[in-house]
Image (cartoon, rainbow, N blue to C red):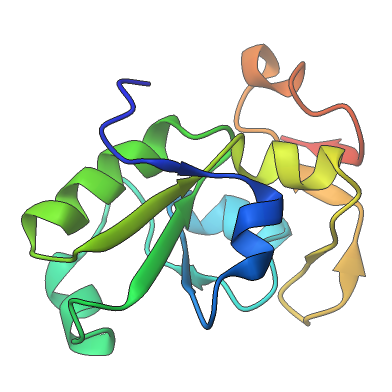
Length: 133
């Protein structure tokens, strides 16, 4: 990471008032599990127009995340270029979230231990939870 987008830790995230949480992983990853109340914006097919329509207030606090924080930094940078002023990258992504015993939910909004690990290479960073490929 180049740290173009400031990190927010899990504890700092929990103190934010009404943050918009954007999952920047692919849909197949999001479908396995995601942080509750996250909105899927994807990475390969990120649609800036759709995001601007859904979240028109450029002053809203937006927290982006992915598996570990690399893809979310890229999308966070795109959001900044669109004019969003308060964009943060969740430190360590969903892996850090799960490794710190935070819940993730499936598409039925039910808590699950499953986490899509993106690849074998990245899977080593998920210590807690069930790895799904």
